Length: 116
Image 1 (cartoon, rainbow, N blue to C red):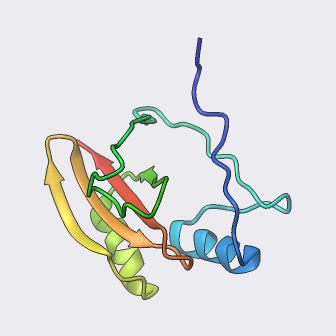
Image 2: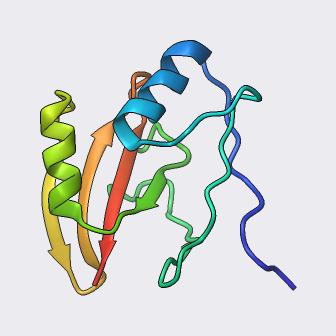
């Protein structure tokens, strides 16, 4: 029945700053309607997963965490270093792939993932 996610929506305290950050840091082209259409590429997957309230994988005061799949995590890290965005947690490698975490201007943890 479900073909995929239709969108991710959330509120922000500073629309201009958030749009600029996601555009510059993650190269998401934010349109005039304050959003972007990210079209799936071959090999891309969208994960839908639940976590318990006390799971420490991401901050317990953050109800939702964004995860963006990237082609090459090392290239992404170089881009982040060049524009001065620090990692919130260092790169981890697991059977699911490679992961890093950064924080957006409002302190939300954002996960970047290179699939194995």
